[in-house]
Amino acid sequence: MAVNLDKPQLWKSDIAVSVDFYNNWFIQFAPKAYRETRIATTEQVRQTLDKTRNLTDIDPQVLEKNPSAISILRMATAPPIARDRLIGLAGISSNLVYNMETKNRLPVRMEQSRVRTELERIGQVIMQLIDEDIFPWIKSNQAPSETELYRAATVVADRLCGTVADPIIRNAQEQRQLTAIRGWLEQRGYTFSEGQNRRKFDTLEAGTFSFRSNVPISQTYRSGTNQVNIPIDIVIKPFHFEPNDFPLLIEAKSAGDFTNTNKRRKEEAIKVTQLRNTYGEHIRFILLLCGYFDSGYLGYEAAEGIDWVWEHRLDDLAGFGL
Image (cartoon, rainbow, N blue to C red; front, side, top):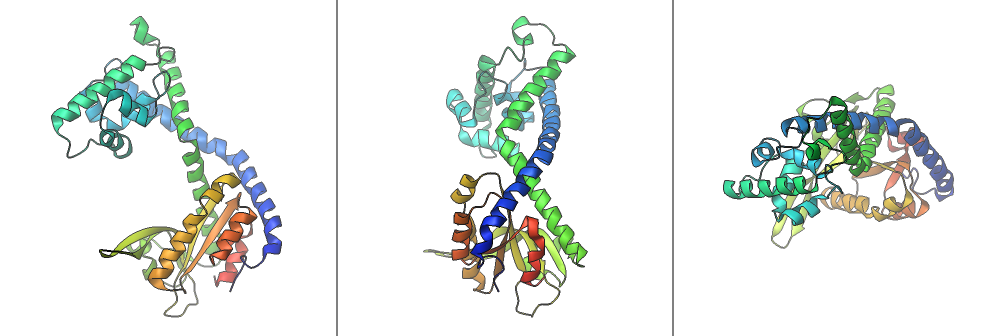
């Protein structure tokens, strides 16, 4: 039974309310999320300054012990340099930089001599481009004051947070949506599923729900069939269900502009197609929406048979048997 996908006469008013809902949240809470991340990032920069003797000792040994510091060092230059720019300037392996920044490690299969050589090149590039306005002690050869250290750390932290502002906001949005739906469910007697089985969507008991579950799907290639997991934000097993019923799968979506949502609207269609190919047409997959989702987006999802609830009207969840 459709809840919102078959009611286009309500879409315009829902879109307006959802945009207002998102904007009000952003103004009230987004700066707080950004500030909290900025404080934590400033401390990380201070630690990197300590480990590199205030950027006077960026040798291979320091980078070996602190691989993830490379993202901070990229923001300490004038101008700040992107990951690919550092790779090109230093003439080093992209695999090395990727492992250092995203996994806080060195590549396990790279020869030690090559690692040392490329780490040395990284240090040389950083020192050649160091922002002397932020780190005046580099040029003066004077020990920095506590005020200078704090000022430099906050500037670099601002640069880092600027490059990841969107992920910071997305993480805060996701947490807000999960908290809201958890409150709605618990008010109606549902229990959050803890422990090892909470990520297995087909092992939930009636009246329970889980977050960030992995749902296995089958993908067919010329060479055969392979099973992979796809992440689902919310999985709910209703109190009343038949033995062959599937839990309700929900993807939480929040967006701050119309352009981005229309660029990514195919993602949900691909996911639901994979689920249906594996489990059949009776698999239940819906969206939890908040923010800038226009009629074009809604029409596209409706055409794919994907229904939704708005965060500003969570009571629509009852229409899905909850």
